[in-house]
Image (cartoon, rainbow, N blue to C red; front, top):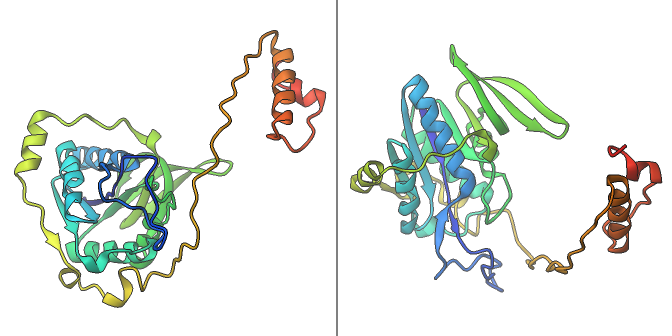
Length: 276
């Protein structure tokens, strides 16, 4: 099975500044890390390869320093990595990013499965994985919580939905996005780190993947950010509630109502529900 894991390098700081003109994160000078959700995607891909054989390829789009995150993926167990890096890719929104990754995956050729983290923590859109599936015309499953088996070219999995979970069977090739509860990512060994640092990471330009320049970068991206602002700070007020369970529940509801967290009245029976 040939598996591509799409990863992203994201700012480590939670107070990154926003450029007032472009409305994009100012990444210069910020420490960068591998997107936390992507760690679970890498671990799942490596585990599948260990069980069923094949190859794991880490793929990312970003500046040259994104190679650090690709080497981290290889230290965990990915066999090789590819970096898309060129000024032409700069400013791509989720649609343009998923198009570029699709072109790279098509260039890699023979891919059976694509695994992504459910979202990147800097954008929180959860759109790139589904976007890749749309460009490829492949089946997809999002918010995957467990991969239950692989047999006869199909993969069986569990995924979250609004009311619980589904059990799905997808014919490969397919695209998955995974949540953090799917596994526990392994810690890279010294041997793995040294091996990853010794490997070459090819850097592909738009011409290397046959990308249409009218579909990548800032100008062709259909998304336009018109305003960004940080969420309001929490009030920092802590209140200790003591007493029996029913009394604590009643006090909690009253406190939330005073703070405006509950807009609808809660009946006495509802306040006591689950504590009797």
